[in-house]
Image (cartoon, rainbow over all chains, first blue to last red; front, side, top):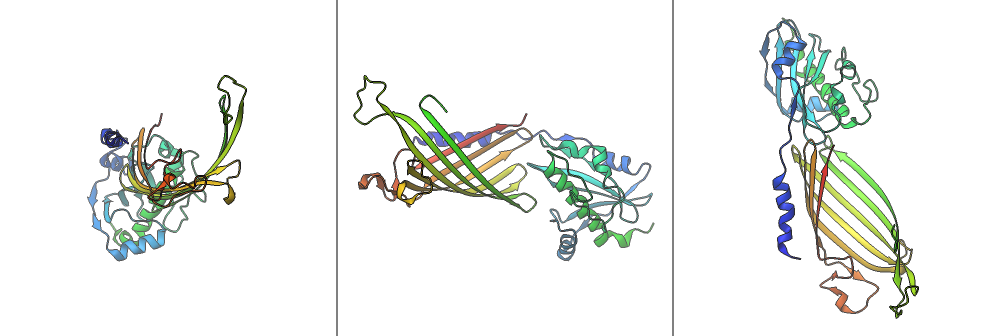
Amino acid sequence: MNSRFLLVPVAAVCWVQPSQAVVYMSVEQAQSAMFPGATFAPEFRTLTPAQVSAIEKTSDTHVLDKQLRAWKASTGGWFIADQVVGKHDFIPFAVALDDKGAVKAVEILEYREAYGGEVRNGPWRAQFVGKGHDAALQLTRDIQNISGATLSSKHVTDGVRRLVTTYAVLLSGNSAQ
Amino acid sequence: MGAGLRELESRLIVQKNFLDDRMVLAFNLTVTDDWRDVPRPGANDNDPLDHAWLKQSGMNLGLAGSYRFTSGWSAGLELQNERGFEGIAPFSASARTDVAYYLGPSLHYANQHLFVTATYLEQLPLASDYAHTSPDFVVDGRTYAANFERRRVRLKFGWYF
């Protein structure tokens, strides 16, 4: 075989272009939409190995990033920005929790996949509202699957479950106004 | 299916994902039966009717794993075991003609619309040629019979519309 042909796959993978992320909301826009009129105090934390272990064990998910990006809302509650694994790339999303740790809203901040964008649909995201860390938050149990968007649906559901568990493990003792 | 070829391919795919779908293990079993319309041995070239259907079958077993090490990029390793058979007998040891193994890495990139997978496979020195007893057909443990190359490069492009 002519060794020049070995350069073809190398050239192909070098040629590939970075994806164009569709940014639906910035963190600031999501904060304003989820907590209208509130101001936000950042409560960024680095999770300890014990906290990671507790979150993973309780939520049955993997903690992808030990850096927790949480903000305390002046009107009560918490805003947490995070990301989950998509089919090819990460899916940045945000969760608003009330002062008892129940979900107020879920927003998809960016979506970079060709399929599965239905997780942005309002009725699907509304299924999370009111659910706390004691809820199942399991796809096909209390959260309906979206046909054709199974992977995104599952990972966003797992991500929300992980964040409500993170609240219970880490933030619930810091909710008083 | 073509004028001189009939092929039936069946494939069983077993896949298990780990680590939030970042790690994938997959096993493929592919069985092919084909009928090729070929001239009979010693046939008169001027007689287009002097032909016969040559029956062959093959069984490929593929085992591969990949890990997405950063956004859009996955690296993997693939092992292929390819077996050729005389006649339509893909599970008959007595009908075996060739057995070869290939191993190599793969690199996969995907974004919102495009995906590219490049794979390099090298034949391992574990081959057998049951159809030809002459030592010329298996050299240094590798078979060079038809369809059994020393090295393979596979490049797949895809576009999500």
